[in-house]
Image (tube, rainbow, N blue to C red; front, side, top):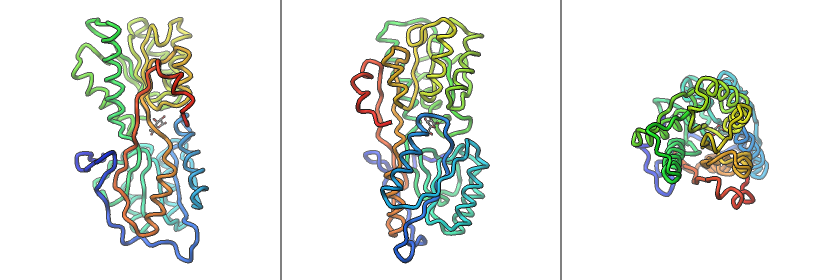
Length: 325
Ligand code: GYE
């Protein structure tokens, strides 16, 4: 796991930088070649992220070798190995899960190809295996979801002895699933009447979110007060399950999720979702800039944290026209 404690973060920008003297700029003014291994196409967030990376590469004049791992770590490892064999200038990837990356990252290091992590972090002992991580602070997102929830229930005057929460987790072992859960639970620890009664992965997809919510509803039914979904897609799938069970989403069950994609704003505007916590997928331009800086022999920040907000349903209609993903 990335040790946030080790990172000096000022205004969302880390000052801890790595010297990159080994990395040379491509010779003869040829375009920079960037190999990018994407997680898959599991969510609206991911689609926007892919689009951001592809369009930013075009704009920056960077040759992008894009590979979709279909949510499988083994495919990402294969893609990274193929980028190494092709001698790309820079490798970037959004890791499916946090563990299991040392061998392939060692190979990249040996080949003197710098690796940039976008979106998700990895759990490696040797931090020299990648030069930078750019993306959100997922733990803070979990905290924001929890704080919004506690505040909302208090304002509504809902003071049951126990508020029963069901949780739809993201992909098991992925950085956002681990951190969002931890952040959310940190808030619950200070508010012991809020209790997670069921928690299962919905793999960040609508279909799985719906399926798991159906199972929750079968066993817990009207006991469920709140749904916390690690992303909007799973919340949207769950909303369908709630409606099919004859209940009213956002009224009978309070729903908070993460990402703030357009689909979530539409759900809020039709009164079916209570709040979404922002997580920006628009990482393309900063990734291309980092690739250029590396090739120019410049130092790049070790950690760049995206600036993000919280959108409750009451601001959805006003904010919707400003949304870019
Ligand atoms: O929240 C989810 C996607 O890693 C931040 O992955 C990303 C997450 C995002 O599938 O929708």
